[in-house]
Length: 217
Image (cartoon, rainbow, N blue to C red; front, side, top):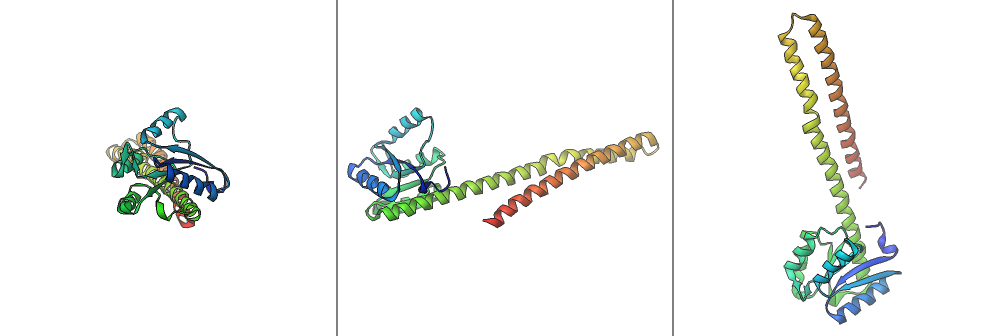
């Protein structure tokens, strides 16, 4: 997904089986954006065919009607969410399904619009919001991934030199009378200590980067 996509060519996949509703959405998109490419799915199965032909999701945005002939309601929401689509999804719904549309926001849907209230301006604002929300979520997920990597380093990489240090200390304590062996193990102790020091410095640096990114948000 490109930054500020709404300022350039917008590629939209519209799930809508009602001809009248689709024509209105198409007109609103054309009115709201300078350049827009629109493709329609009358059935959810059409989407499966598109994915196979185009080898994945090649659209910038999905507008999803909650009632398709072959899939609808909560089942449709769960199905589209399970696809783990990386582009914003906006639900198009009627007044009767507002509660369901609100609940979909907890599942990863970016926004929902009531069909009878849509105007080019409202649609434009919703799409801008959807892109911003999706980018923010991706950013948070990237930060969480970095934090998980830091935690993995703490729990695995640090333990290796620490285990060697503890083992060397134990050997030193049991071989006090052998000076040559003692000097060897002291040198190994120094190597392992320096190794752990470098790992800890790296952990601190990575944590500071993540913290700085959060402060700049």
